[in-house]
Structures are given as C-alpha cells and as structure tokens.
Amino acid sequence: MEKREEQILQGIAASPGIAIGPAFVLGGDVVHIYPRELAEEEVAAEVERFKTALEQARQELGRLREEVARDLGEESARVFEVHQMMLEDHTVIEETIRRITAERKNADLAFYEVMRGVQSSLSAGSDEYLGARAADVRDVKRRVIRHIQGQRHDHLAPLVEPAVIVASDLSPSDTVSLDRSKVLGFATDLGGRTSHAAILARSLELPSVVGLRRVSAVVHTGDMVILDGLRGTLIVNPGPQTVEQYRRRQEEFTLLQKRLELLRELPARTLDGKDIELSANIEFPEEIDSVVAHGAQGVGLFRTEYLYLSGSGLPTEEEQYKAYRMVVEGVAPHPVIIRTFDLGGDKVPQEEGPPEANPFLGRRAIRICLEYHELFKTQLRAILRASAHGEARLLLPMISSLEELLQAKQIIAEAKKELDERGQDYNRDIELGIMIEVPSAAVTADLLAAEVDFLSIGTNDLIQYALAVDRGNQRVAHLFDAYHPAVLRLIKQVVEAGHHRGIWVGMCGEMASDPLATMLLVGLDLDELSVSPVDLPRVKEIVRAIHYEDARAVAEAALRMRSAAEIRAYLAKMLRERLPDLMEGA
Image 1 (spheres, one colour):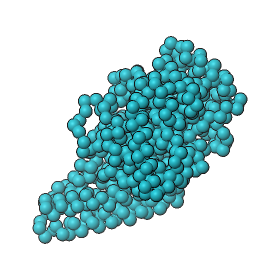
Image 2 (image 1 turned 120 degrees about the vertical axis):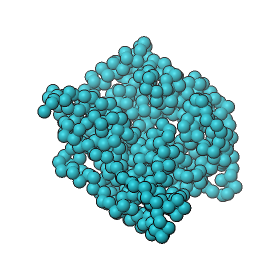
Image 3 (image 1 turned 90 degrees about the vertical axis):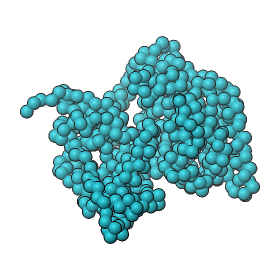
Image 4 (image 1 turned 30 degrees about the vertical axis):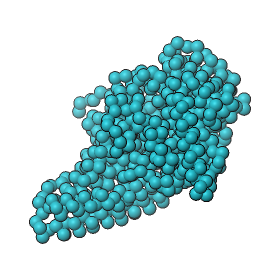
C-alpha cells in the first residue's frame, strides 16, 4: 500500500481536546429526490403524505429532545426545540402544499425546493450565525424528506470502532445520535464556533475542528489522523514522531483539565491580591448552563442579534423581554451586560435601502438603532424590564462620537419614560456602557467616559479598523494582529481614560480569551475580561498564578517593543516561565 505523506489542515478550533485515531468519513448525508408530476387524483393523498411526514418528524424530534435532555442536559436539548419550531413555520408548510396542489409536484420535491430557498438565503452572507442556521434548515429538510420517502436515518450505522468523524457538515441530530463510546472527535469542512453542532460538541466534551474546507475530500476512511481542538488543526497520516508528540500533549491536556476544574469556585485573583472580574460571552440564552458550569462571574457580553436574525420578523418587546429575563435570572446574582443590536455589515434590515459598497463602514450597530427609533426603543424597553429581575447592564455597540452617545442616551430616557407611563418596573439606575471598537472612540475615550458607567473594549473590530485589515479577507488576514503596537497603545489609552473618569474598563473581544494576552491585559489594568465559557478556566489559572506588579512590568516592556512578533515572543516567554505546562497544553 502506498504510504501517504503527513498533511496538516488548518480550521477553526470549536471544542478543545486532542484525538488520535482512524478517520471515519461520512459518505454524505444525501437525500435523492426524483421529480414526478402528480395525477389529479393523487394530489390529496400527497398532501396527506407530507402532513404525516411533518408529524413523524415532530415526534422524532420530541423523542430526541427528551433523550438529549436526559443524557446531556437542557442546554444541549434546546437545539431540537429550534428544529421543532421550524416545522411549525406556516410559510414553509403553505408554500409546500401550494406546490403539491397547484404545480402537481411530489411532496419530497416540493418541500425540498421550499427549504432550499430558505437555506440559500441564510447561506448567502458571510455571517457565521446565519451559516449555522442554514445547517439547521438542512437538517430539518433531510429529516422530513426521509419520512416522506419512508427511509431510516441510519447512515452512521457503519461506525463500529472508535474513530474521528470527518464530514462535509454534521447536523446537530447526527452529533447527538452518535455512539459516544466510538467517537473520538469531529472534523468538518463547514461550520463555525457558534454552530449548534459546535456547541453540542463542547457539551459532549469531544474535540472538534470546523471550517477545514476540504477535509472530507482529502481524508479517507481508515487514515490515521490527529485532531487538535486546541489549535484548530487536523494532521492526516502523521509520522511516528508526530504521533508520539501528540500523545504527550494529550496526556498533558487531560491533566490540565483536571486541575482547572478545581478552580471553578475560586476567585480570579492575582498572587498579590488584585481581583479581575472574569465573565463570559454568550450568544444564546441556552448557554447559561455553560456560563455557570465554568464559574463565570456573570455575562460580560450577551449578543442579541440572534433575536432579530433567527425570526421571520422583528422580535416583539415581549419576546425580547423573556429572553433577557431568562439570562438575567439564570446567572443571578452576577451581572449580565446586554449589548443592543449590532446589526449591519451583511445583517441590515431587509426592507430598507440599497446595497452598500462597503457595509462594514456604513449602516452598522448604533447607526441603525439611531435611524430606526422604534426598533431601538422596543429593545431598550425589553432590557429595562429585564433589569427588574437581576443586575442587567446596557451596552451600546460601535459608538464613534460623543454626538451618537448623547442621542442614544436621549432615546434611552424616552424608553424609560414610556415604561413609567405604563407603570412597569425597571432598574432606574441601570448601568450604561459603550463598546470601544473604532479608533475614534478609543482616541476620544476621555470624552465618552464622562457620559457612561463603564467601557468595554471590542478588540475584533478595533483591530480591524485600527489596522485597516478586513479579517474576512484571506489575502490580508495575516495582517490582523492583536499584538500590533498600535493596538496595545489604544487599549492602554482607553483604560487610562476610563480610570481617570472613575469608571471600570473591560474587554469582551477574542483577545481576552487568548491565554498569551492574559498577563498583558492584567498589566494594562483591565478590570474585567469576558471570554468564551470554555476558555475561562485557563484564563483564570493564569490570573491566579501571576503577581499584578509583575504583570504591570510585562505590559510596560511590551509597550516599548517595536513589532507584534517581538511582543508575542516576549509574552510567550513570560508565560512559559510561570506556567510551562499551560503553554504546552495550549
């Protein structure tokens, strides 16, 4: 047999851990549909066949939901509630029946065409959240079509020994239907960290790498692979030395995880007594369990765009209020920072305006909210009402000038007045903060800080705008660097401006989740770090292993350096000296 060379594929780390073993490539969860023109006398029976399939799919999802809730918890089970809701979509049902009756199409073809349209509209943009919802639509589509065709969902049956599952995509129901005793991890062409399959992989505590683009074409069933869910890589046909190296890393990671579990109830406090508020970033209410399980001191960033993007229309005040209240009560007594809609880019209101040549520099975030007062005030009233049930805080995205902030505050005052007129309760002293994510806000942070209760640095956009690098553009993505000296100076400037005005300053961008940055950020005097729940234990361990004064010296040294490469190498050296095993496991 021909010996294949070692090959490294780079993707997105979706769930931490290392798996070593044979690959099992799913042959494709393909459904075959054969167009057929119905005779008039067949139409009524075909409509009934479609309705029966819908009901069978609902019952199947209900059983799956119960099984997953029992085995993995409510958080993991909620994905099937989303799928059940899709089966209740009247637009989809009525359009499918119309095609069966008016166009005389067979039920599986009619349903396929309708769902393909929904799936295409969600997949059109580059937004990761919408891409994840497209995967949900695909999952529901296949499930119903199988019932129409009377097929069994058994394409995973050939998995008889432990293996790394490789697929173009992996539906949520595929993920939970697997025999966990035989699954070492997941590697997929598609998906992102916020896809349901990725969330479920983390719940299953199985390593996962997504977004590998062509892994299902490159890897063959039986190939030896190493899946690195920490670095987001898949190594195909590794040599003996590589396998030995990763077996050591695997053992080290296991030991590290056991040690980190012991930190859950401990404070994020440096050796010399400096407390750092360590909270979690979330996108959905169903992540509450993970926030609590990882010992976060609240939610530092609750992204709310899903409420707008997942429905067929604008979310009502009541719908939003229920979602915000669920999170506020779920993490009480800790605070929840709720960011108002960060719409824009490729997530603009569908009914308004022509396409923009550069939407990321156009109508985004607060600019849309200030243009559509009712959209904004509806959300503000919902957040304010949720503040009556716990410590909710308001966060405004992409503020770029004092004028924008003052205008937003005026609308917040109007929302409060409307609740007063209704006689509805809310926290009149709710804290207000702004995201610092564009250079103009960072440079004028002293002016903005005088008008708010806290600042939260969003590094993803701040780096993008400060360095003029489109992080989604592969040709220049290598220039996107959190350790660029300009970025560090902007962070320092924002922190000093906030503290000068007597308010706290946090960070909720991806940089806060990077263990390499922890000592630097503590030394730059950030008061709060908000990270993804799964990254929280590692960041906490670093905070607890360093001295605040030592971190300040590290930050000062980094600020004197001339390049990102020099800074990164220096921080790695400092971290390795203090926590060598953490660096090995990272």
